[in-house]
Length: 339
Image (cartoon, rainbow, N blue to C red):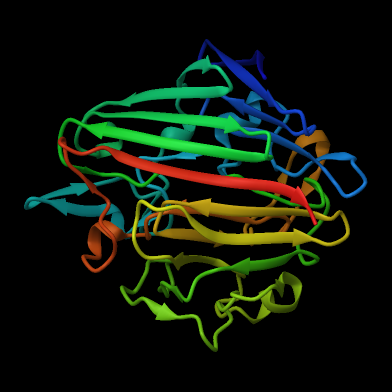
């Protein structure tokens, strides 16, 4: 069941919040502004619902949304080195908004746009037309994102996009999770498994070096269940995890990751057709969130399905190039439950 209500206004236009419910007691709320997931209420082992998704109480917070809480990210999720890429000999220069690099689609990415929205059965469908030259990306891009909450407690996000000219595209959702409940402190009591043999090492500005390296024998080896608190401070760089894990080919649904919280009994499992996932443990988090909750460093984790960062400049990475004859497709599923 999907219902809707007003969530205030943005630049004089009404913002709608959609509420998706199933018969298991799960409630997920999503805005047509930025496709933002504002709330995910799921039961713990005692049947008590808790909100495991970080966010803000109102549009004032989401209008700036420095951490990108819950948002759809595009045209290009993650980083492009020096904000520059070349297609057919022509170089495109993007805004620099993250050190020397372009991050998450630019200054006004898909996360800060008001999307057209409609309900189709048990699916919330959002559409947006990104103009040719928007944020200096080539081609008019038409994007559709469909959110569905199933009776198996799965949030399924299906993305599709077409373009009028060759462009690059990399879409994701940037939900921040804390399975103990938003504002419940750090995630050091969570256990994580990431089902990947390889990852992309990065330089000091978080741009991949171009290597695809084995996780074996490194702090990035999370193939068996690992307590986050026990390993996070051993990750080189001192900021915890903010790295892309590699799963190979695009287009088939892969089991990527699972996070568990023993005290509440909650777990989250992730599946995607994308070739990678960014595992981020929120080192830079410092916000006042819903209900006045203090969101602190390491207070959440993100699992962002994606193509690899800086793929337009790394020919050995799976391509993010989209031509007018092609359709971009992605399906990512977050499954919630209790152990």
